[in-house]
Image 1 (cartoon, rainbow, N blue to C red):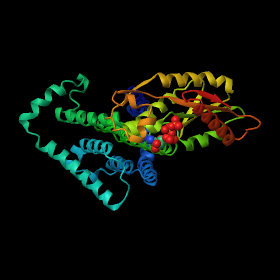
Image 2: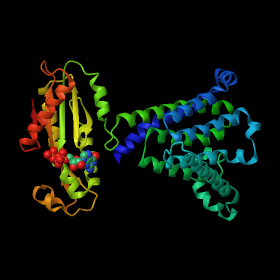
Image 3: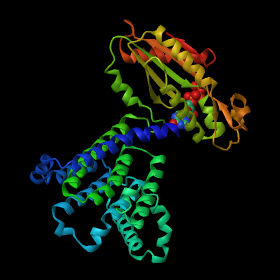
Image 4: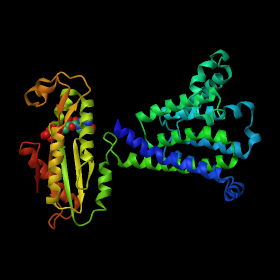
Length: 406
Ligand SMILES: Nc1nc2c(ncn2[C@@H]2O[C@H](COP(=O)(O)OP(=O)(O)OP(=O)(O)O)[C@@H](O)[C@H]2O)c(=O)[nH]1
């Protein structure tokens, strides 16, 4: 949970700080900004449409929809007569916030006609629900909103009606809940754009909106690119760099490095005893421990239950103490499993070393390690990797839960 909060903060904070800076800059009424907004008034619209095209290319349907929603803000500023109606002006911010919140909870559905039709339907339903809520919220229920409205800091008291404040708060909390479950860059950026909408509504200035939309276009572009990069180079299950990332990393290695192959001992029996889901939990746990390796090592998931650690500019002797301490840490950790035990197969009964813990909630995991150093004889990365694999085989033969080097 702490890790999740850390990654959420590290993704969300830069975008929020950037947007806050933009608001401050726009409020400073700098003459250059006004000249910029007059002469380059179409730039934010072009930027957000460009971000939309990139999202389209990467198949990120949610970001495409978010860009369209932000483009609406630009169009509203550029051609007010085109979109101005009593309903649209009153409900623009709540409607957009509700749509962004639903987008956060939805998933990328691609661009098949049926899925796009579905997206249009739920967007219309969301807008209709927001409209009905605002129009028909009973007057006699208004007093329920007052205590929540009182939570607002006093300078903002008059800025937001109780209805607006409660609605924004509810939608924001719902979105935050989603972020706690999944905080990809795209999720964080959608959330940041949600937060800035009431501010834009309050300021109601063309230049602020344009500048913010331009910033959001850049922020969305960054999110789409980073998420796509992560999809390609991060292992989906464990979240650590994948084999593809390892192969790319090898290009950057110099003439001195150490490769370590790590393999979870008797991993098959975890799957057999507790099921595939617990097997996945074990993989995640081991990956998180490997990722914290000291001595400058970088961890990758090689495939299955095998991991690779690479230590650039290090000798075997320098690396060994770090691997030994890593092995001890993993072996000393008691993992609490969150799954019901499986009936043990007859054939697995004889060989399964975890069988005794099958009724307990805590299980131990061990790993074997094979270490190899780049040398004149083995100068190619593939050769060093092969040596590390051989050393791993030695470790397995020596009884597992140990480190062997070649
Ligand atoms: N849960 C889960 N299991 C996986 C995954 N990838 C591979 N496996 C399983 O990992 C197991 C690998 O087992 P083996 O290679 O036989 O070796 P082991 O049981 O780890 O035993 P030793 O390596 O000899 O100590 C197989 O049963 C695979 O199905 C995965 O992503 N999730």
